[in-house]
Length: 230
Image (cartoon, rainbow, N blue to C red):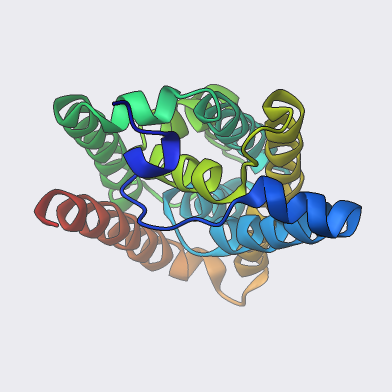
């Protein structure tokens, strides 16, 4: 006998959300979307590789220079969430070797970015700024990030409604996540930009770059090792 989606995820008990929604009606749907908005906010505002890179771009080139990267990362995460609603994340989760390859590709790529930042020279007056990471790098960062797929899988397991119009419902969830994720990442880039106004910033730039590079390495490899050794 085949397992349904929630049983396949190893959950022992999940209430019949369809019955609950019939009971509480539209107010229950509003509550569900508000709860998901809070979930999306917490997932988007907490430190992670994407937010840290937005901070780095804001520090080096200004907050608005991070917008292409933010658009790419947010759109990619929205697409991952939408596709996960139709089973793609569960397929990836069922192949440990695929998850392992994605983990190491993402970890090595972000380690290379940290290495470049650690050894980067400070900006010189009159020197044109280096080109910041764009939407393609932002999208690629999420696509090879297994934690993004795991988060999407958890979202679908918790917030989808059995027997409902899943296409419409999942599209609402994906849209809400995008609208929440963009301003959260933008806050990090503005935080980075605020350091440019510090007194003696050029003298501190090398130290800031190295601190951010080491922070990126710590976040990436702690998450990677904890995932693999769990």
